[in-house]
Image (cartoon, rainbow, N blue to C red; front, side, top):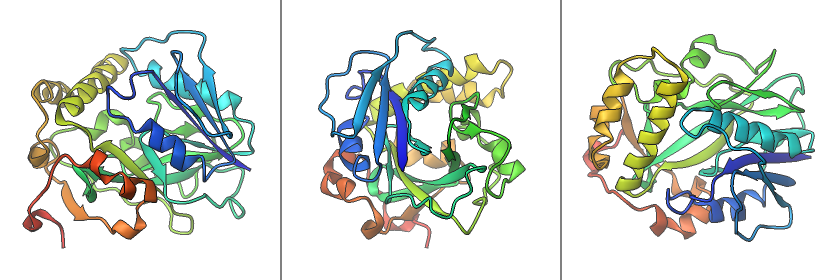
Length: 277
């Protein structure tokens, strides 16, 4: 059996998290889902989804917010294989664990939609996370990965760069290489298809959490913090991520729930000349 675990506050609508669609789609591809919440959550859920209210409040201004929420959710998930997800991430299909090694953690390749569901941005966000694992694993100190003694085809340079505080670094970008070829599991990330005003508010909060959680981090994060005080402009992606590029999405590969609800993810259009060929 394979399950997924995640956490949320009750502000998912305010921040344009597609939690309702997330529940609808991902519940079809896992045997069980645990959704932990820091507040009472009033939402209908499928029969294999279980809401667990967290009995304590973390520091919402640091990355403790992510770590404790995901840790709490994981402890209630009793499937053998587990997948750590965020509530804006959609699996492409059911993950086949039949040939996976329980001693290893496996990565999810993150396909980052940008502005609309037909556009992917590359060389901007972290492209993979170690989130598929057997049994209990500790969540790392950014809340992005699980940690442990083994990872599938572990790549040290990629893993060092694989922290949230590197996502928004303005300047030179070191391209990632996906850490393995035999087992490739995709998720579609809708974090960058929100109202521009919400994008600014969300990234401001997340950048503040990174700065407060990791004193002394690069000053470029403070530069980004100043940038997001203004309303986010999708067309300025090169200013934030100089090495980033836009890529056309094969719409047939998208989870059907995103295609059906494409209007909820349509906030920017780009001229064809900007897409990587």
